[in-house]
Image 1 (cartoon, rainbow, N blue to C red):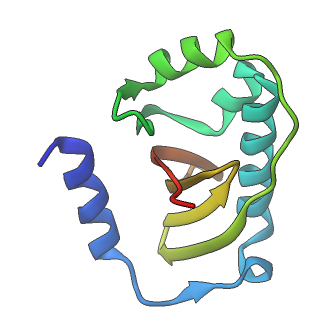
Image 2: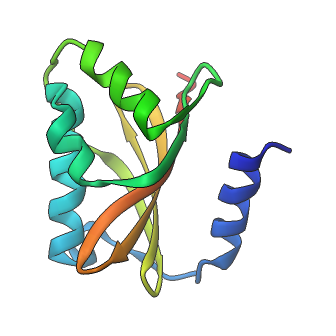
Length: 132
């Protein structure tokens, strides 16, 4: 089992069984999620970076592992595209750690958010192509 998968399993195991409906997510976290999503679709690395932790890592749908700097370089090469809102979202929280899973643009996305120094940032993500 690789380090990212082990980390995601670990974080998932820490969570309580409380799942928030979309309206119950704190306003500052909901705003950070939307701002980061919009920056992703706009291919705006400066805005995306504001909501992405320095230690961020991701596993993409093709299985590639990227650090924050590698994902930023990739984002800089992307072409902006229309925003696709999250759907089928599940959010679970334990103190200052939040895991969210949602469907967007044909993909399932798992994000781990943390609240540090008054700011929400993403620690890691994992993306999987959705089955039809």
